[in-house]
Structure formats: structure tokens, C-alpha cells
Length: 108
Image (tube, rainbow, N blue to C red; front, side):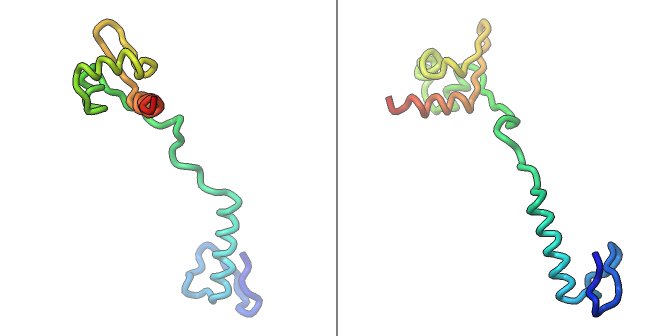
């Protein structure tokens, strides 16, 4: 970036900010701001890359929804079925999907 015509020097990476005039600083910041608008920073973390949260067993479902063991069993077989993975006695529940399913079906 070239300096102001009145100063007679070129602004480089090594030029101290204290040497710049207010007008030169404005010009410098304006350039940075326009560059930022042209190339914004990437978004933090999208919902697709968000780490899944799981609860395990009937006790996990019970604590997630703060219900009794019997009610958790009923939820597991009903509303939450799409969020449940079960193999034998092992039960894994996708907590975020379970909460979403519960909200969708709680009004019915």
C-alpha cells in the first residue's frame, strides 16, 4: 500500500502504526474491512458435524426425560423408537433425536 502523497514514504509491513497519520490508518482499516467482507471467516461448526450425544439403557432414557423406569420403557417402545438402537440387551438412544421426537409428539 502506498503512503499519502504528502508524507513521501511507502507503507510496508514493517511501518509502525504510530508513524501513520489518521488518514493513512483509515485507509488501511478500510482496505482490511473490504477484504474481510469479500472473504468472510468460515462458520464455526455446522449441525452435520456436531458430535452426537447418546444415552445408554432404560436408565439413560429415564434420566434424560426425568421419568420413571416404567415410563421410559413405554417411551422406548413408542415415541422414541426411531432414536433407539438395540442389540440384545444393549440399548443406545440418540439423545438429540429422542428429544426432537418427544417434542413433535408431546402435543398429540
